[in-house]
Amino acid sequence: MSTARVVAMRVVQLVVVLWIVVTFTFFLVRILPGDPVDVIVPNQVGAQGRAAAQAVREHLGLDRPLYEQYFDYVGDVARGDLGRNYATNVAVTDTLKQALPVSLQLMIYAQILALAFAIPLGVFSAYRAGSRADRAISTTSFALLALPNFVLALVLSYFVGVELEWLPTSGYAPGWLDPLFGRSGALDLGRHLEVMVLPAVSLAAGQIAIYMRLLRSDMIATLQENFITMAKSKGLSNRRILWRHALRPSSLTLLTVAGLNMGALIGGAVVVEVIYGMPGMGLKIFQALSARQYVELQGFVLVIALLFVLINFLVDFLYAVLDPRIRRARAAA
Image (cartoon, rainbow, N blue to C red):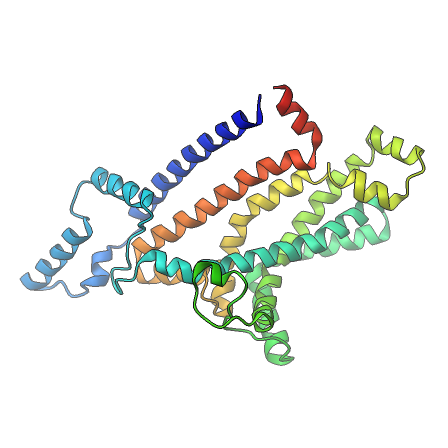
């Protein structure tokens, strides 16, 4: 099967998945408790209040059949219109431009930290499997895995930020990704990194444990393969064997889980951003839920799902880069 055909099939699958995501998001928000009209018209007592509520309901299209609302929503999404906050009349896309770069940078930093620690620790633990150092690293990883990120965020905020006063515990400073979204604010990378350290560490800690354990398990299996034995017989150094020959084929599971964990990072970011007062997607989702701003919530969930699908779509193509056997299998199909 040619590369172009593989890409075309993946694009078709991507479109179908995105349509399912849009449909699921629409109906999921509709089954949430509460009525958005109650937020706009809190006092519906008497004929005047009921008339005002009915006028708002007609304006939002909530009085129309569900299937009509659905087709209107799909059409609006296709045009890039995610609606407006019905309390402030601010477009959801404008809110996304302000919030999305904050969360994206936080997740990127968390992933970089997690992989930067997990890969060397996983390789070392696999090479020294069963040793005292391996047991110590494994025990520490289990402790990190059992520690919820919001607990770690509170502990770091108190001891590192309040007691030691090493790093700020709240606020946000624009970073390298903000100008791409048109987010306003003077660029100060030094201040930006200071603000992002504690939230990124809070999100990355649990991922380090997951990635390290996965890589360790796959590396142990890879080191028993015949091509590793051949590499050893040629007199190659242990460092070259570990990092050049064993790491790449052992990284497929790690790559898969790293892509899937973007959803877990979004879930963790909701709490972490609230704790550190960061104006990202997590904080906006929390505020939209609290205020029953279902139009905003619908747009936020849709964008997060879209990012999740696109990331895993790209991960599928990275398999062939890491493992030539997959590339040859696709070419022969």
